[in-house]
Image (cartoon, rainbow, N blue to C red; front, side):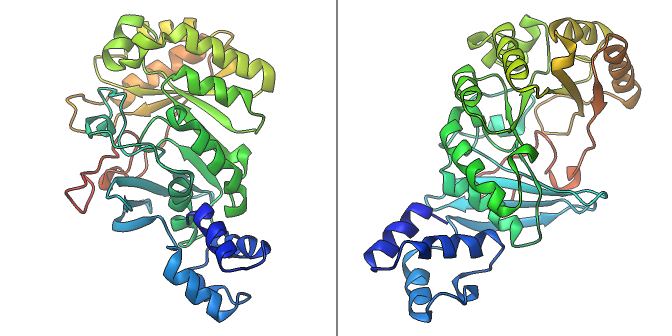
Length: 333
């Protein structure tokens, strides 16, 4: 829902200011449309139905994985494709993975989103409407900005969405913003005081290798990025989560684990999530379980906390790194 359009429309109709709060309260609780908002006059509901679209996104396709993960493909009002994911866990968690951009301009070589033509930043309302779509399915309690795009390149709208997410059921402490190391946005993130978690997509500690698989490293070298991460930890006492996708024969040798452990100092500032590579059609293969286990063990011996991420939604191309959409199609690739 475009909240600015809502406020402007209500003002034009001569409605009291509290009406916007009523509409948002219903929407954030999972209402299916204006018709559900029984404390609004019927005439006003009809006016809003006509003048303020209930969502800024149009659902184009929806798929559900064998593990219960749900992926949704949306189009924006100007036809831009956007994907988002709902992940269901056995412990009861309901986590959503949302996008901040249509496509991504940073072209990490292992990520399917990087193969898309970049569209634009998403608005605050377009980000929120991804969350609201899943809220209409069931209550949600975690959110990760790990979908399409680099959130730190759209940090103003991302943080504005974070202000509203608690109303939808997701507190800031259960919200994570991921970055490949876009320093201007990271500095803006560090300047705000919400208890939002920070995650860094690192994937290689060797400068030459990281630049090869993540071109952003040439612009913002890893040591400068990690300096900001440590600053964040010192100021907030919140660990930075390191995302490390395991690529067979590329970044998964014991020497790479040793390089990573050396780069992540002090160790107590970080926690590493090792991510089994999910097929994206980019030419890479995933590391085997034994290799991933040895890599994790090498990190732990060096004093770096490390876990292996549980893969969700791989069979519907909803797993980490797999989000990609084409505006010419009506389903995700």
